[in-house]
Image (tube, rainbow, N blue to C red):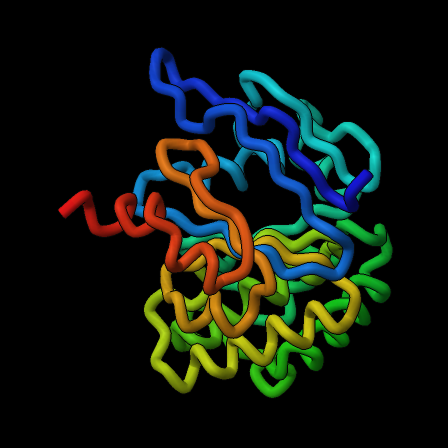
Amino acid sequence: MSFFETRGLTKYFGGLCAVNNLSVKVEKGEILGLIGPNGSGKTTVFNLINGYFPISGGDIFLEGKQIGGLKTNKICKLGVGRTFQVVKPLQRMTTLENVMCSAFNQTNARSHAEDIAMQTLEFCELVGKKDYPAKGLTIGDRKRLEIARALATGPKLLLLDETMAGLTPQEQALGVELIKKVAESGVTIIIVEHIMKVIMSLCSRIVCINYGQSIAEGTPETVANHPDVIEAYLGKE
C-alpha cells in the first residue's frame, strides 16, 4: 500500500457532487501536485483529507491506517498538517506564539512547545521576526508563517493550499526553496497551486481534477499537454 491513498473519495453537498470517486496514491517523500480550474474541488479534497468536511463515500488511508471519518484533531495527531488559501494567523499574538500554538499538538509542556516553535522558525527563516505581532507581517512572511504553523504540528503529510498566491516572483522563488527543504526533511507533500511555474519546478507527478474527478495524471509535461486538461482550462475552442 502507498504511504497515502484515497479510494473512491466522494463528497456531496445536497445534490451537488463536489468530489466524485477520486482515487489518488502518494508515495513517501513525494511532492504531488493537485491542479484543476477554479471550482474543480481541490480545496474540498483537502477538507476531506483533514476531516474538516465529513466524507460521503470512499476511504482515506495514511500509512495503511484508515483516517477517513476521524475528527480533525485526531487526523492532525496522526500526522496530517495543512495550510489554507487565506492565511489567518492569530493576529494579536507574536510570530513565535502563533507557532507555539501548533506545537502543542506534539507536547503538553510550554517549554517544549517553545523549543519546537523556535526550531521551526529557524527552519522557515522567520526567527528574526519571532517577536513581531502576526498582524504586522508582510503577506510573504504571513505565508511563511502559515507553513511554519503547519510544520510545528509534526506532520508526515503536508497539504499546501495555494501558498504562493499573492506573492512576488522573488517571494515565490523563496517559497519554492522552502517547500523543497520541507520535502528533503522527510515530509510528504500534496500541493494545490495555480501558478504552473511553481508546480512544474516542484512536482514529479501531477493529478488534474475537474468537476471533482480525475481527468489526467502523470508527469508535469504529460498533464500540461493532455487534451482534457487543455479543454478544462481553456474550453473546447
